[in-house]
Amino acid sequence: MPYYRRVGEVPPKRHTQFRQPDGSLYAEELMGQEGFSSDSSLLYHRHLPTAIVAAEEYDPPAYARVANRPLKPRHFATHKLDAGGTDPILGRQPLLANDDVHISYVAADRPSPLYRNAIGDECVYVESGSVRLESTFGALELSAGDYAIIPTSVIHRYVPSGSPAEPVRMLSVAATGHIGPPKRYLSARGQFLEHSPYCERDLRGPAAPLLADGTDVPVYVWHRRGWSLHTYAHHPFDVVGWDGHLYPWAFSIHDFEPITGRVHQPPPVHQTFQGPNFVICSFVPRKVDYHPLAIPVPYNHHNVDSDEVLFYTGGNYEARRGSGIGQGSISLHPSGFTHGPQPGAPERAIGAEFFDELAVMVDTFRPLDLCEPALACEDAAYAWTWAHRPAQ
Ligand SMILES: [Fe+2]
View (tube, rainbow, N blue to C red):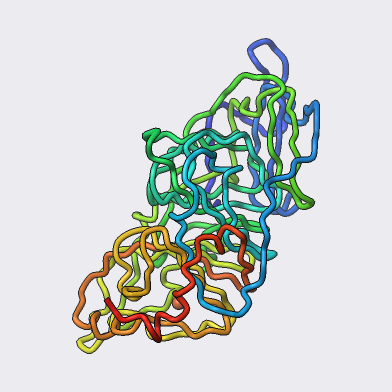
């Protein structure tokens, strides 16, 4: 994260004696990236964060994963997947994956177990419903339109907080490495620059310590060689204070200020985050191109180095009208295929002044494989909609 945050009690000097009310020492923990050479935080635990009493292998449900062959644009209707009866971690249904990112979707109605992703940061996006993200750093309340970035190895869990009848729907992007704001929007010292579409005031971090009691507490760990289940001697939520630049944080897509122009602006203006070999972009409601002869929908394009994933999460996505795309749809436009607006969309868009659309895009620089749940909700006719399906 670009800026320093301090929550709860910390001693005035790092690495010095900091005592509990009974006179014993708090256990200091440094969580840091890149071998003590990048962002970090110091946390002060009531108990040893090292104390585990058991470790077991864990095998999550196995899903087949296949290459996108024959190479085709794809449409996955995530709302056709099972909803409810599961939690936001173990219930995730993998959709698209490569060696850099795993993209999955869940509609969950119950709390998750404690979880630690030791492979990389996660970016989750809440499509609908509300959920409380609890971690060793504190809690964050998330609702529709919120992104949350959870740094690598932060122990956390999700507790749905909305109506029991409404599952929380979440898209998750799990990286192999760290996710953050685009570097071009940050100063040398990490402050958001004036041309950034969002800044520090738009970000939310944990505001208070989150303490829980408990012994023999299970934590699922997704690590570089699979999954394990660790049992901690004491509940990991025992941090009375922390400070630093590394912590989970949230940002609402509704606070993303769109960059517009006289003629069509390229997708990088929508970029919101970057990660190793991928980017995440936000398409938000906005005034559209205002040159007198502008065509507000995108031109046909072939970003030859990327697979493009779009998650349609609100409004009307004008360029895709007539394609079968709807709320909760995901399209995959792979490298090797030129994509563009549906037939008739450019003509219809002429003269438009505003697009009411909300979408999250993930562009990956290496090809994405298709996971079994994606194939189970695929609209197989999508690939031919530029040729055969009449515009609606
Ligand atoms: Fe595109």
